[in-house]
Amino acid sequence: MALKHPGRVPLLLLAAAGLVTGVWGGLVRMQTTFFLPVDHAAWISFHGPLMVSGFLGTLIAVERAVAYAKLWTYVVPFVTGIGGGCLIVFADGGPGPQLVTAGAFGYVVVALAIVRRQCTVFTVLPALGAVTWLVGNGLWLAGGTIPRSALWWVAFIVLTIVGERLELARMKRPTRHEKPLALVAVSVFGVGVASSLWIESLGPRIAGVGMALLAVWLLVFDITRRTIRLPGLPRFTAVCLISGYVWLGVAGGILTAGAELVSSLPYDALLHALFLGFAFSMIFGHAPIVMPAVLGVALPYRRVFYAHVALLHAAVAGRVGADLAGSASGRSYAGAVAAVAIGLFVLSSLYAVLRESRLCESGLRESGTTRR
Image 1: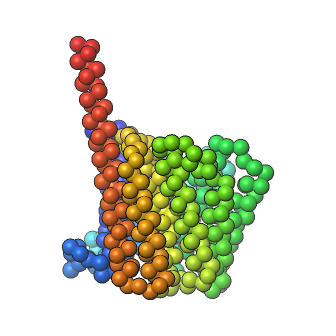
Image 2: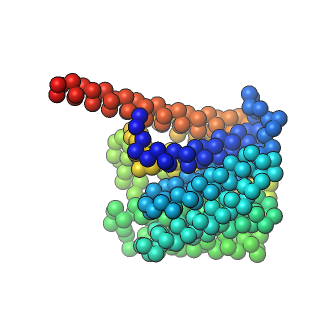
Image 3: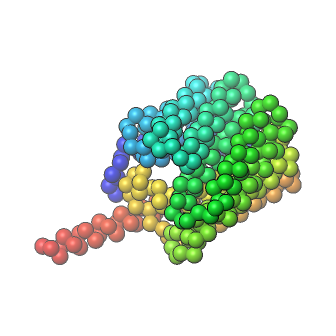
């Protein structure tokens, strides 16, 4: 299997390290250790930062660097990836918090450069998301609790994805009310996130209303309403995205209902509905599209991909339900199923890539034999 962009592999491996250790840490925190060694896993306290900055932030920064096509932009995922590595290696995180915050600052610079190149709603929203990532990391670096940063990290993911969906919305003819309604939902969400710094009781609830409004907007106006009617990869991607939008709405509902941004079971339900149900749905659905652009290798769609999608949503439903019901055993089992779903996604994707590579090589050999 020949990679067209082997220089990007180390960056993706850094992101993968954040994913593996983040999932590992989450399982250990729920006492779902199975065969996992825990004696020296002091980094389990960095479960959230590893998943947000070490994995998601690094992955998104790589995609943005590929899109911007400037060599200097790859410094950002390198810095955040190394920062995530420091959170793993050092018991106290070492320079990890400083590095992921510096990486977030660099990502803001990249996002602003993209806005300068093309100033539109769908470039401004990810730039605002970049700012919220920086603010969340800055609050954590300044000694704040992880729950205090959590809403800002949520905003990073939500605004990034909504911006991307608005960009794709150009492929269809928008209705007269489509864009204004999107801006209203984003504004409500943004006001809630910003005001959470001063009005800790009301701000998150306003943000929750904004999240719910964004979920409704995506379910009503997103292009997936059309692509789900198509066979193969378009339908698979649409199924992943639509199910993710549902989890975004669930997360917004939990936050609106009064989930406080402190370590608690409703707080856990909120975060896993958002980061596991919403964010990973986006990853699963976009992987066959993004992989060729990032590494230059084909990741052909296979129907078996629905298996890890179904398993993921079963796990999220179990986790959210167990959190809200206060079931410790339910949380543990759901966490284990989620880990299996992510592992199955990785293995299925790797198998599809290798299979496609072997088919291509076989076809080239047969073509060469025919020519001779």
